[in-house]
Length: 410
Image (cartoon, rainbow, N blue to C red; front, side, top):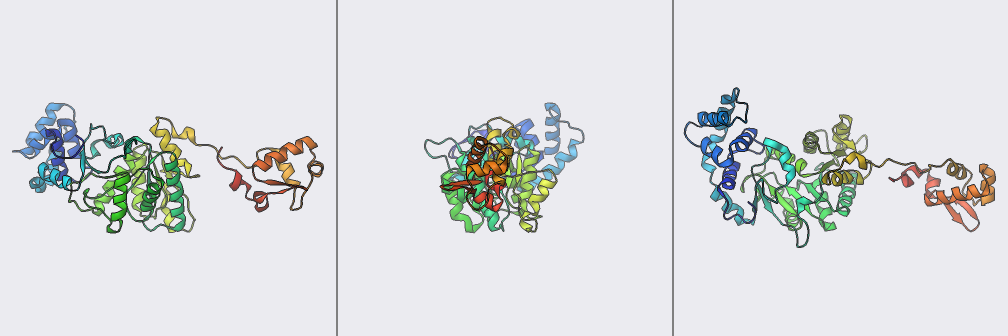
């Protein structure tokens, strides 16, 4: 049930209560709720002789392999028991209302479908702050690109992130990230500046805007896009919850791009989640000697991610997946700046001083007509320039960077 959290049905309220008992991604809870329903499973777990009652219910359901399930259920119940006193849905709903949050549960129109790919590790509920502005499609109905990276990013990393996020904005994508310092912040800020939605997934409760230095930024994210959290209001962010939060960032995106990542960066965790979920994962290359690029290079070397050759690469993939296509089909091949052997010959005939078409034809061994056509093609590529007294090498031709300058994607 979506909307201001005031009145929810029993099943949604049970999911809220469940979220107070478990840590994010608890598979045992996921199995129980998926198999028995949130309300029934909660009643069994918090009732008398919960292990026997739960095992009997699972056996009668026939939907779960109950071999040696007793120990699994017993361990899970003991894990949840210390929090039984917290299972007060009304209290949690009131706390969410106090900060203007909305409740979203599976089956709601606003529930992000990508989260269902997490299976039993999917969140019980989501708490949301922010709504699409008038006349705009819901934030999660757009193509979504998850952009993550190092907290201590380099200037080159910030520039790469800005280019990718800007390309995503131009394509109408929602940018998903974690609201942290570094690459996350760059991604959110560029999306906000471009006027496109962005989502920040919080590691604690929806009222825990962390880090403290990003309270204003996260407020802007909520106003232009959305803040999401799966833990109840009041839950502080912890190292474990940051890692668990990463699975949501990966699942929300139709593609994932890691801009910079050290050898032990949490962004690598997001990339691995994305790969396990079947999302296209990209990594931005950096300097061989840069510690901030070690993680990206390792992702590519291990086959977890593909190299982002162009800022558009992860964007194209996200759009393709969103529309049900194969992102591999949109990988445009790199084309050499000089694709015609006659262009090569006329370029070789030029220097810094102007040369007439007749001289170019003589030096290249082409007819005047063929030389004229080849020079025109080279001019379009920026390799040569036409002057009143003849032809000269262009800027790209002089610097020898024709492949970089004009070898762009077709």
